[in-house]
Image (tube, rainbow, N blue to C red; front, side, top):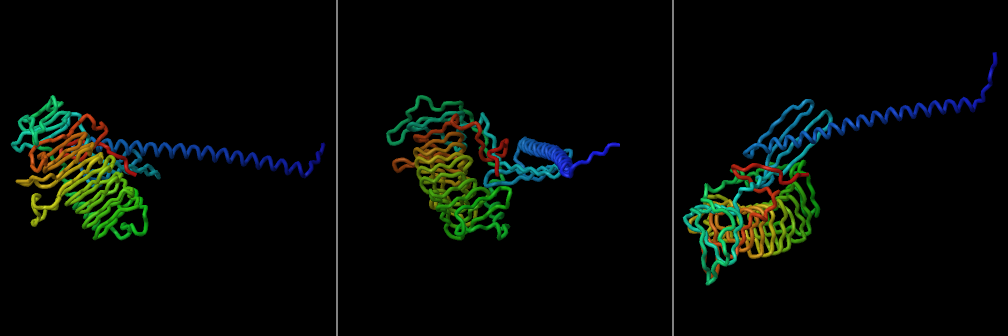
Length: 420
């Protein structure tokens, strides 16, 4: 028998090798486990995202906008769908749970703009449409009895060679907006009244406020005038005043809602927001409101309400060289002997999207999209000309195909914007 005597250092080295190998094996096993876990988690998240997309697509397939809450079980996935409003547009919020993974997706929803939608829809008030000056209408139109004529204002006649660059159809029933939109101001007031104290924010304490649409709404409220100067407001925020809101060019407003009787948007303002008023919306010169912005005016329907003819300045006024991409809407009651405009688009001003007016519309600039109005009006040389278009442009072809606007009773819906 032969005995070999090993030095203690060799034994220690052997133990060191064993420990290193054990650690490497443990690390390898851990790496495989983490990789499989990460792969499985990634698969679950991808499945949840796909389920969210499918749920929103199925929700959009409804032929009429709906409000409701639904849930469904898909294997191990629980899906919850909530819908509501953000201003005059709808929202759909889908939450999917797969095991321990949660995925949420929220979209702003508007009406899908159809290819056969008219450039112009004029309500039948037993008056022909009269074109004067350099007026251009491109796209199909729906007119009372297909009646469109040339006219003359202060010696200026119609300069075009063709009255309408498109087909002329006899008018159908005037399109009605989705009924709940008439209650949007009451809905917002209810939202504010139910808000908790921690939802209110003070602009005096912070000049930058950002809030996710997955969180409760933030509210800026004042009984007096709110003057938005050198302020940044982004996301799920409502600014509410019971008198007036003024927006300065130094303000940065994105996806928020302004609510007040009077909203005054100053010169050179750039942003993306909704303005909801009950008396007046003034848009200054050289403003740029990007898609999907909205200007909504709905006079308060009270027993002591003045008629439009008696009231002072109940209108949406878009001044020179301003560009609005979205929806411009007046939702008042039609008044007899009304000779004032409820929507006024000044020369060189442009609206890309939809103009919807249950009163008089005075267009001196351009509308790239669709116009729905009860009447046109042209105030020129001290006189009022009913159902006259003077140097106006209404061109459907310049509306982007991706555009989505306000909800009509019969409209299909589509995603306007993904919320954050």
